Length: 280
Image 1 (cartoon, helix red, strand yellow):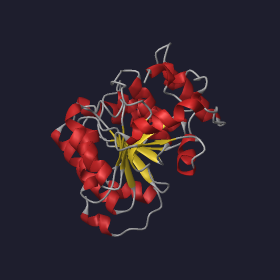
Image 2 (tube, rainbow, N blue to C red; image 1 turned 90 degrees about the horizontal axis):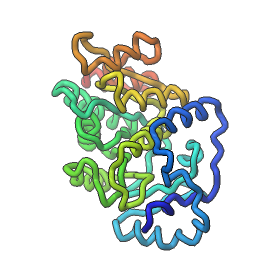
Image 3 (spheres, rainbow, N blue to C red; image 1 turned 30 degrees about the vertical axis):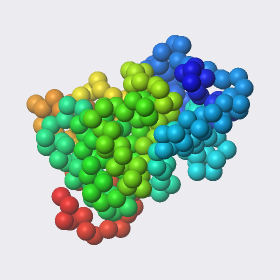
Image 4 (spheres, rainbow, N blue to C red; image 1 turned 180 degrees about the vertical axis):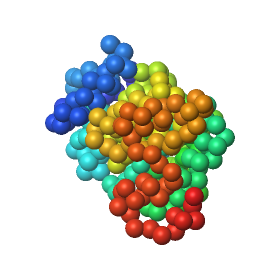
């Protein structure tokens, strides 16, 4: 199906808070001027049966405005869209987005995996972007304890990175879900990922930056979280280590809270758990 008609812009959903407007302004900086995803599709209602058939052929479904489970997520966004979903949508309860460098250190990947497992065990949903590095480690750690949710920057026909196709299958089978706002044929594009990042920030109570340079996609997600009034946690690190440039700068600016373990996040989310002493 033509990429220009996929968006299903049924209605312009409300996004009243000033912070949301600021996030949308920030997001627009990462979009191509002729982005077809932002154009209202005339007669989009007529496309619905065809698009639902496309989703079903891929073992997925469409989540659209007007559906109860989708509206709680779509109402948080500044633009209308259709979601292509393998598995389930992110939970209505507490959830945290874990993000970080694609070229993560071994220590960062290990930390992301352990902390994601501990958060999942505590009942906090772990959401990430299915990228290499920190994202992949977070998904794998969460899967050791339960479901996780991944947001793609491409269509379902183009898993990105390609080696995470198997991870996507595991996530969908775990009770979690793989979600994308892009139609199945959409390849990964640079301007897709800022749109993916705003979903990570909007659909969670907060964002944890495990590692990342100051000028990186992880820091875009962090800024979007602040725009939306979400919590922002970072893992501080040695100032000589470029992997912690982003977290350290955010701490210096007073924009983020230091996170020394999953217990900090759970405490901030008002969870009462005692087992975290065993998950340093």
